[in-house]
Length: 239
Length: 239
DNA sequence: AAACCGTTTTTGTCATACCAAAACTGAAGG
DNA sequence: CCTTCAGTTTTGGTATGACAAAAACGGTTT
Image 1 (cartoon, rainbow over the protein chains, first blue to last red):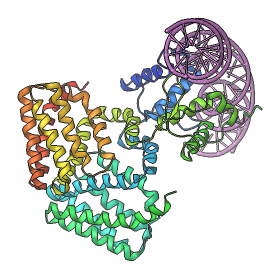
Image 2 (cartoon, chains in turn cyan, green, blue, orange):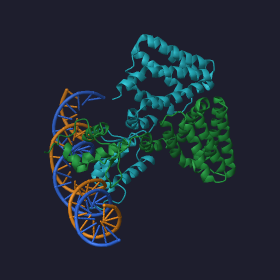
Image 3 (cartoon, each protein chain N blue to C red):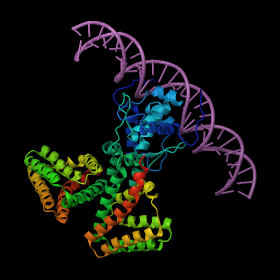
């Protein structure tokens, strides 16, 4: 029984990972199912529990399973949100690099500028109505700083639904989460909210007028304004 | 010595991860340095080797260390490339989802369209010269299909250097790597190369003429053409 | 059907042991 | 003085066995 034939050039855990990965992929283990107990995997695959635990850790880091301490790991419903969650810790490293926040924000601006153009060119009337509703909610929330932030995010999030690419909303949520720690430090006053609402309105109006150039510049102005507000804070926070 | 005070609500490995993360962040362990041997970490932190190994695995999945089987783990030089490498396995999952490749490709098109606009608006003369050189190399490689692919990638890669955001080249490399498995199946003939070269030239000319709209549409046409070539293949390959 | 309680699993962790490959050491040779 | 190579020590990869605490299970009572 003792198969201590150690140290080829692969880790036993890696081959176990592939085996379980396969069972997930071919439907033997379905999303939401709990994985077999560690000892059962030990028996079935003839490896030690050490190896099994390592394999489970790797699967978790690949977002194939979710493993809360103390509970049975369950097969994750792999989607864009879960995937971006899984890379969150890596993204956090990036944000600590010189200009990390700036560079990531630049990526966001690029994506969203593209979305503004798209919306101006091809948003359906339903989508425009959705945007209008979000804009109105945003206006109503001007006095309530906390609510304003939420409706602000919601307005931008509508833009991300226009092209029908499910990666976009997921990416927006990820960007929002990653950048939030810097954003919440930004002083939020009703006066500022007013300015931001007007910016949202300008973007919406350009989309309504089907003017892609105007929509893009309005959006860029809006985000540049927000950037200027936080960039000072980030400078100061640099350790 | 036996501190078998198990099972709070967090794992011992996670706190160990934080401890080592801290030592990396504050410069105690610098990029390229090997980590202390597992047994030394065991002594210093009063945990078992099981926990140490789990922690190392987690650090590796966070791209903070690189751990080849059989060798001492070394502190990774954290950069955008390493980070995107680390998320590669997650990205692979995404590509297997329905329309995964299409959606990822759409993201790429958005980014690159934005780059074409940027280049038309604000590329320096040095950058334009670089693009011209890349274009010429691309033209010269038309008869050599393999070389053409390389110069094709190189031409696009120049676009990614224009805004000076180091995330962009890294992302381009990542996209190229992730999409490569589908791309290499595309039939590559000198005739096709000719068409693609002309498309590159059209993009470059638009940039030269400082016409952002034209640059964007030229680039979109180019990528749409490429997409049409591979989309059939992907349909067939769907398991 | 819901709440309670005792029993059985199961996870998280520790300790120890062994093999084979890597890292280190020092002598021999250029 | 540097290189080469064999011998020794260290270290990573894995297996086994053990145990506490929490979770899952099952049956009983309300």
